[in-house]
Image (cartoon, rainbow, N blue to C red; front, side, top):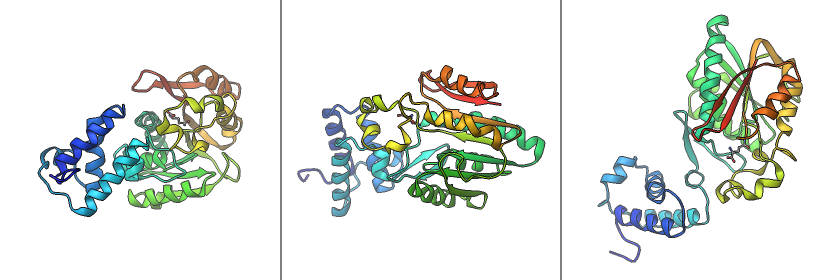
Length: 287
Ligand code: GLN
C-alpha cells in the first residue's frame, strides 16, 4: 500500500476518515458518493469493488476532490452534476444546487398540471428563476403534453438549463428567456412555478458553508425580509395566468403565513400547502 493507498477500498476509507475527522456529517455515504461519482461507479460497485486498483490520474483526481470537500464544497458541486426527480442535471457557478425538498414542489405542481392537461390537452408552464432548470425540466419529463418557458437573470443559469434540457431529452418543449421575474415575458401560462430566493439577507451568513459559500447568493438572497421575490411574483402573476391556472412556489420554513398574505391580497386563494421531509412548510399552491 502506498501512502494514500492504491485500491478503491483504501481511498474510500481515507476519504471517510478525513471527512469524519473534519466533523462532516454522513462521512461514509459521502465518501462512496464522491469516489463513485468520480470513477463512474454505482454505489453497489463502490461497495463491492474495493479491490479495484486506481491509476495515477484517478488517484490524483480523488485526492483533489477530497481536499475540495474538506473545504466544504458540496459533493455534487465537485462532481458537477446531481440527480433530481430522475433527471441528471449539470450544475454551474450561477445555479442553485437542486434539493430533494424541491422535488415536493414538482410533485404538487404535477398534480395540477396533469389535471389541466386532462382538460385542455396541453399546458404551458412558466418557471421563474430556473437555475439548473430542475423544476421545469422535471415537469416536462413527467408530462409530455406540456411546454415550458424558463426565465432567469443569469445567462449562465439559462445556458445550463438549456444544456440540461438537451441532456434529458425535453429541449424541443423548452425555451429560455433572460428576464427579471416577469419583465419581457409575454402570454398566458397555465402553471407559474418558482423556487425563488427566500432567505433574509441578514441571516445568510448563518447558513451552512456548503450553501453560503457555494450556492449563488442571487439564488438565496430574498432581500430584507426574504419576501422580495414573492412580492414581485404576486404583484404580476395574475396578468400572466390563463383561466384556471395555478401558481406554485417553494417557501422558507417560516413563510407560509406571510407569503399566503401576499398572494391573497392580490386575489389568489391558497389551494394547497405541503411540508418537506423535515416537516417544515415548503410548498404553496395558489389558484
Ligand atoms: N432551500 C435553500 C436553503 O436551504 C434556499 C433556496 C432558496 O432560497 N430558494 O438554503
